Amino acid sequence: MAGAAGATGARLSPQVDSLIRAAQRGDQDAFEQLVRAYDQSVLRLAMNLLRSPEDARDVYQEAFLRVYRNLDTFRFDCSFHTWLYRIVTNICLDQLRKRKVRKEEPAVVETSDGPIDRMESFEEDAAEADPERSMWNRQLKQRIEGALEDLTPRERMVFELRHYQGLRLRNIGEMLGTSEEAAKNCLFRATQKMRSVLGDFV
Amino acid sequence: MTCDSLAKLIPLYYYGELTPEEEDRLEEHLHECAGCERERERHRLLAAALDRRQQEVSPLLLEDCRDTLMAAIAGGATHAVAAKPAKGPWKLFLEAMGATLTGFHRYRQPVGALGLVAIGFFAARFIGTNPNTQSAQTASSAGDVFATVRNVEPDSAGRVRIAFDETRRRVVSGSMDDQNIQKLLLAAAHEENPAVRVESVGLLRSRSDSGEVRDALLNAVAHDSNAGVRLKALEGLKPLTGDAEVRNALAKVLLVDDNPAVRMQVVDLLVARRDDSVVGVLQNLVQKENNSGVRLKCEKALKDMNASIGTF
Image (cartoon, rainbow over all chains, first blue to last red; front, side, top):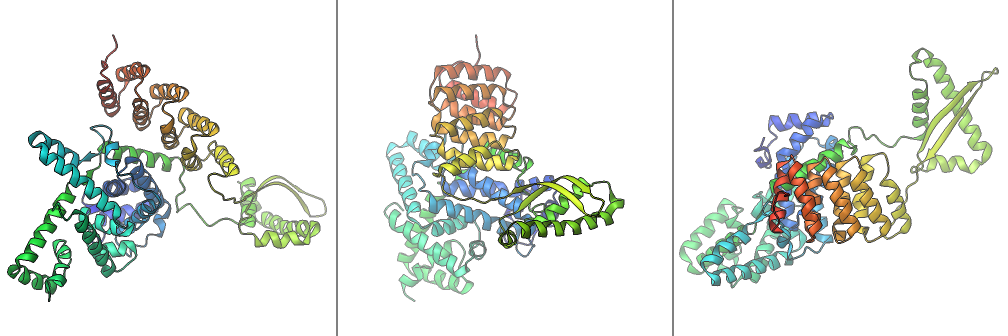
């Protein structure tokens, strides 16, 4: 089942198909299995976009409660992943529009069992070996955060889905209710903006 | 094509989003143009730098989310399968009649007759009191009426007297700053339906600066039977971890709550502020805690506070 979430845009596997049908009939175990097949990628998307475990938790709850309430409207005319991500991306876009995501969010990671920021651990390794390199990495990280915050919520979303979640632009367009061409333009604008902010670093 | 127009394709090339023709054209150009090849390399470096930013999801956070979701669902979040369109007054009335007469299937025909009599009763009542009321009742889609029949009494003339209670649904909307909305939410935080409580407490948590809301959140954390509601209430108490009363209440919850996700969150709240009294509470918890996640969290918190894990 772990591979189900990766089957982006593909036809539903018979296993997922039967889980959905059982959940539509009110089978709570089937619903839970369905959630478990997809929820890690949903939470990761929310964490990456909002940089806050609390906000990511809210997105997770709201998204899966909406799925629960509306599962009977799922008609198998697109992949379940696409249908789910329509819900998730809508909620995340609302959050991005409403909230000003704090720049220092990664610092809220309170313990070692909290989310791990790869950049942080990279910096720590580097700090021991080369303080100058560490300073450079810290500046780069700040620039990256700033560059990402400068993107419009839509550009941010397309970039996130393409770069970090590895989804195809055609699929992203389908999720966001737009064309592949529009998603392509969004991705292009996002990369251009980041290049202009990070130009002297890379 | 110029370097400028081809360079625009580089990000899409990196993501494998070019058509085969565009890809061929760009690759051909990259072989010949050192400037564009450098541009491609810079894009690769940018992508590599961005890769390092990705956050991994903690398994504990994931489990916590799952627990809260399933608690909310088990607690009564509405399932679409069960959520039928809003019932009209007549349907509710018939259902109430059906419920009152459960088991009397052989009286189906008489019940139907009662229903017909009831139509006459409603019409007479509405027209008899105020002719305008009838149109207001039928026109108002938000005015769902929930009827509970208290007494049915046939008379010798073939008519019937039915006594029933009516509960009328009203819809109000307003901002969270509206005192009336806050009062309704405070009342809703005690509703029987856990889904209503989860939503209400979730909304109230942003208003924890009000004493009344704070008390409601504390009450929910300590007494609500639904873990989803308790977790929402804990979120609302985050800004109040410096309040001695809140800390005392949380310390009690930590030792008695049966849900590990709740205990985890309480530990987070308590250790957010350095306070020696927390050390004793955490040491107690470590001794009796049977959930390894919570125990590890406590041990780590104690270690961070330079406190010993055991009591002596």
